[in-house]
Image: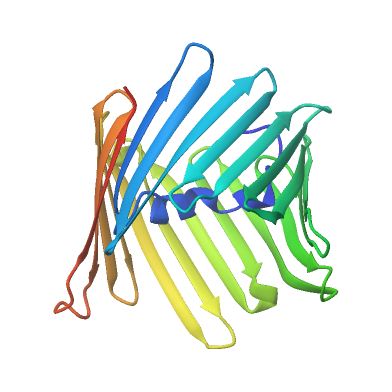
Length: 276
């Protein structure tokens, strides 16, 4: 486990990743390579429905600084500069998405043994200000986050939560959407699944009295093959197979089915990630 409580954005992240990460209904190919000079190049081509898109990115890391530049097929250029430990336990991130000069953003993260703080501000005339804080230990942490919009002088988001972490399990409770929703999640690693895990997530929206219960699991078939599945109380079933073709190159096949409307066409996704 880490030495501190981590960022508030990491509360419940492991459970969320098991239920959502790598599931897709798109077709995507990613090719990555790196040079001896430290430059990493990544190209993506994706097809969603009848639309195709792509991007190419370059990342260069030197000592405690990293520059990431990405160009997509819509002529957007996203540039991110991050500097780690320019002050003890502090990371600064600056980003901009051209040609929208008002998309600039500056963020600072501070990680301490018993607390963490983040602050981000938009680089425009009427910026939104995001901030979060967490206090505690690697085993138990309490945190909150909020967004303040200077143009309207109001808070558009505020969430709070608690995270409990053990070597083989993780649990979290998040009160979100200005107190209108609450989400409980629990993940447990099981040796019976060869290093896989089981997860459960329950959410409730008070304004609509809507409840959603989702359960899922992952199973490590062998060191190169991973299976995942999830099902919620609305009848949505998802399944995923991920296989490492060669070291660091993966083929991922996923599907989504509505068990309460079997006449609907299932959705399938295919992702190929190659790193020669």
